[in-house]
Amino acid sequence: MNNFFDFFGRPEDIGCMFQHSGVSRHQGRRHKAPHLPEGEVPGHDCQYHADGLKGDIAFAVSRDELKPALTGVLFRFGKKELTAVATDGHRLVRYTRSDYSADEFSGDVIVPRKFLSMLSGVLGEGESIQMWMGDNHMTAAIGEDTYFTRIIDERFPDFESVIPKDNDRELSVNQNVLLSAARRVSIFSNKSTHQIALRLTKNKIELTTEDPEKASKAQEKIYGEFSGDDLVIGYNASYLKDILSHIDNETVIIKLKTSISAALFYPGTQGENSNLTMLLMPIRLND
Image (cartoon, rainbow, N blue to C red; front, side):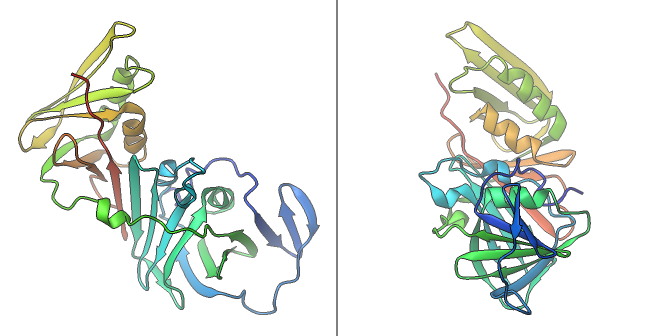
């Protein structure tokens, strides 16, 4: 299984440092590593296994520099549980693992996306990561290599309050079938709004879009199992495709309430010791 950071892009300048055998690398340049204290790196200790941590979260990180708290991934360290959260205000991803332990540290840390990008290039299958948290920095150790980064000193939004608890309509559908249909229909959507509509009935899903500016429209019907009253809901096709493409399971479960409330996306089967929840806000459909 891919590790937690597989989706991150190419590393860039992120104010971090890498130490290995007395030499550090920063932006491709080599220079002598700074002096580090003898013994353990200062801070609070916690560790977890990278094996099995899925790369299904960073796509939701905001690129808006005016919202610095959303430009990183929130790591919430509990005594026996690790939760990672990313959001850009339109979509949210929460990933939780229970095969985790923290000897000293518990709390929230926002880690820059680009630092995680660098770690993605060195994490091996089955490797463990050990981390130390300081007041304004994080240290990660993978094998004999040590990495340092500043953390984002901002307050992350209360994500738990925006995850609905009462979505009582449920759609079960093949992940690849729905994703493929969304890709085909979205080709004909308006290039500004990327709007597509899903009409959900008991055993059928109808995906439609229309772009009056170019006199183009598309319609496709697929099969799925829907429980609840019929529902028509609109989405930004780009966001919908992102959500679906990061669910690594044959089946996707979507829980809905109304056409103007957030929907929750889950894999048909959760991974061992893990739980993945994705949230997507709808858009209002044109009459």
